[in-house]
Length: 508
Image: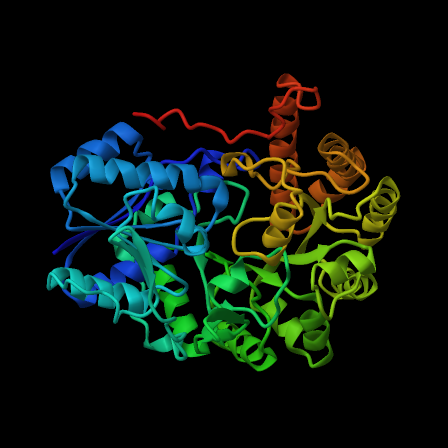
């Protein structure tokens, strides 16, 4: 049986250039490894890194005529292209079975299945479900209801099977088939995640349920109670040994030196953090790494001595979800064990003891109670953090999040085209500010942050990685805002999104 996994051509986020957008889509080597175990013919097509446009992709599909194509999309802003791919597959090769997965498909199946030629949608974690589904397709199975964790259309009715239990031991999963990917195309940026950046993960899930987050529901434990699905946050990790083995393989076979951990929360388990760092140091692995981290866990690891070893082992860049300075806003986001004051104390630890680490923080603008006063306070508070880069994002409810359901119910969402969801442009106003006013305030927040003094401070840093990141942030910020001015972003025209950038090869 021939299986093809495809990430289609994409317009890319304007805050990144083409090289920065070419990072490994981790789902592909993970599912490809399943196919190798089953001895299927497997092809991975990552159109972004290989610069394969829609016309070229059509020719490949016509030539290969696969039995199964796997597609995945967790980012709502790319779903239009994902669905275009689905229709293209069926147009060229009607007999091909299309299996879709990822957060957006999982959460929108009721809308997607009746309207698009998708044969199966995998809900939640994918490997075991994909494995069983491929076997059933190969055997021409007629009834799929026994396969847990899928949904499909049968006689124009949507069938949803029982939830699939989460994989408890992630070490049991086959080693990702990295060799099937165009590994030389990833991590080519001169400044960002350099040198040789590559995505990797050691854990799945989260212990919290932030209302704006679509990551934790995708890897949550799913149960049925009284006919209703219940999602419970759960976090699991590979062993340190397994993670180090993957890192050494990527170093030795593909010369990768910068590891982009895409875990929703990297630093939950302090003992794991310690053992991982000690092994990196013991093996003298010359690497650097990025991770999404929680501030409270960083404080804990500083107190027990683990954070120092993490930095020694190559921790070079962290991103902390700070979200806001207003306690009521944090509470409404279900952001537990978090406060602006606590985060400041955590960042002060880095300023004092680990100045070589690049400090990035994210903020969410546009909660229903957002006012000019709350944004003015936030602007003053952010300066106290002395972040290397604060990223200000418009609150963008997406399917699968609690806040999406809430905003739909309240009829707050003004923009329903997912293609305009760039996390920079407001898709709804607050109770006190319009979309235009929120957009202008995001612009002001950046303007007050990206200054000559900010740049000079970074460019003269004694640490090379920091210097490179400051150069990168300035380059892309100038590019975005020049484009912004050119398109008259703050006019009264309806088109207020940053607009995704269309690559030159997009339709070739």
